[in-house]
Amino acid sequence: MKIETQKYVIGVDIGGTHLRIGAVNTDKELFFFQKNKIADILDSGNPIKSLADFLNGYIEEHVGVANVLAIGMGFPSVISKDKKGIHSTPNLECLSNINIVDPIQEYIHVPVYIENDVNYLLQYEISQRKIDKDEIVLGFYIGTGYGNSIYLFNQFLNGKNGAAGELGHIPALGNEMVCGCGNIGCIETYASGKRLVALHQEFFSDVPFEEIFTKYSTTPEIIQFVQTLAIPIVTEINIFDPHLVIIGGGVVGMKGFPKRMLEEAILQKCRKPFPANNLVIEYAEDTNAAGVLGASMNIFEKIAQTEITVG
Image 1 (spheres, rainbow, N blue to C red):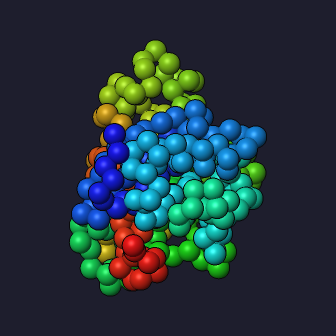
Image 2 (cartoon, rainbow, N blue to C red):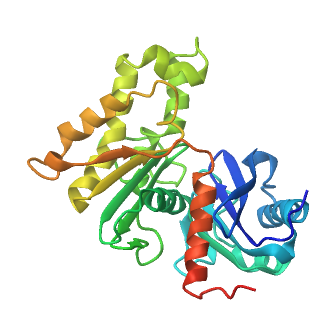
């Protein structure tokens, strides 16, 4: 059923495993939310066309293209500095070295904006908390990979090439595992959902994956896993001395995840007396729609700044 009397931003959150999509109206209300397996949507041989076909079908079914102000898409990728293309997506190889904005824009005939997915996730948390724009906020999202977003004084840190915040790809001493990015020794190979899947297969296959923390959170393997998750977080905390740390992602959201253990590991390794003594750690809101809503919030901010002409 279409609701044609309103205008919408289409928010799209593309992760390593799932694609989430929704239509957000000018009152910031979410409609027609969907969560799909990314493998069911992306054709690795022609990822742009398959994604464009999916978006076009969703829009036509639910709101109609005439009622779409823009599309905002978050990818688990290194996004080009001009926000037109994707340099690299280690967990979705078909989405690498491609210009994605122009062809989708030409296909659907609405403005298209792309961003690193975790920036949209952190945008949502910042908006929900009404965080002061003159603060430093660090976001850590542990899902299929190890996502990171850095918010510095009212803007996200992108870097010279758009590759800032690739925290999962800092090298770990003694690690010889090959990462999806092509390098050897990235800490993401030890600290991510992919690593947890490997631990499940090797040590804990007697229980469903979803129960790994409820059954085995005190085993040496899981303790080591959680300790390793803390290392990149502490590294960045010690660099930026943030006002707030937000931790989220599918792994942290699993039932029984030992949050207390992670917090203790962070505080133990953090520089004393500061930033450890007044460090503030909070967890991302448990909602499937955070990336979709964050994308829409980002686009509506652009609208408010007259970067998009409405109507």
